[in-house]
Amino acid sequence: MTTTTNKPEPTMVAPIENSLTAGRLPKPAPWIILGAAIAVGAAIFGVLALGGGDFNWGGAIVVGALLYIPSIWLFSMLVEGRRRAMDRLVTALVTGAFVLAMIPLISLTITVVTYGVSRFDAEFFTYSMRNVTGEGGGVLHAIVGTLLITGAAAIISIPIGLMTSIYLVEYGRGRLARGITFLVDVMTGIPSIVAGLFAYALFSIFLGPGTRTGIAGAVSLAVLMIPVVVRSSEEMLRLVPNELREAAYALGVPKWLTIVKVVLPTSIAGITTGITLAIARVIGETAPLLIAAGFTASMNYNLFDGRMSSLPVFVYTQYANQGNPPEAYLDRAWAAALTLILIVMALNLIARLVARFFAPKFGR
Image (tube, rainbow, N blue to C red):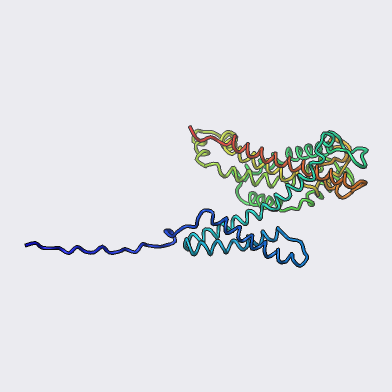
């Protein structure tokens, strides 16, 4: 006698569906949606241009970007689920903010290079503006003045700022430290023209009214540079682990020698980077140099005697006091602006190289 056993029929288990296991849009889908959104924006502005106006490509791209953000969120919500849709929405917003921030920077760079490269010749970098009233001339006196004034400002501000930051981190306690921190915060927000007026008034007291010298311009830049050096150096010194200090103290090393041999070498890369960025921040100031150092068309190598020109002031004077022909003055202004941008870019590159090669090596 045979017995049959009824096998249970397999039950169908419904797959668990959530936003993490939902489908995904094809890889080219975001680009297709973006292209369709820009096409819709172009169609809108094309219809508006039929009335006799010009077609606005910039407006079409902006409208397309605004249409893309809700469109990518909607398609992702329908296909991928809520979590990935929110991820794509935030990604679109962040990317849009980045592109929006890059537009003026790229536009500025292209404009300055386009208009400034025409006077990038040997005469421009080897001649001054002495006895030049029309075409020709150069920017050598302004480059020399910028280097001398900025160098003097660095010599004044770097020791003061570095010593102040060491005091605040290693020694400062109580009311004096809080007062210095408050004054540094106030100095950080001082308008540049106020620093120029301060330097002008200070030197007018000792040398007489109307005195404008390169050292006065350096003092005005140092007033702007000191709080930046203090803040950047203070943050770098605070990043040094206390264990390093305690290990040095346990070996009987005095505090001042611990700072010189342990703390400063550990943070030297960050301090140097902050100082370089502080120099790049003040090298393009115009108002304090225009008030304190003045302007001259001749070479001046003496910081303590006579007016001294600089690149920002040269750009301003060439644009504000156009002669005949005006194109020559504008070309010199654009070329000097391009030179200043290249100097600032070089300083930022130096700061990055210093941060990479002089950072402490913790590996064995």
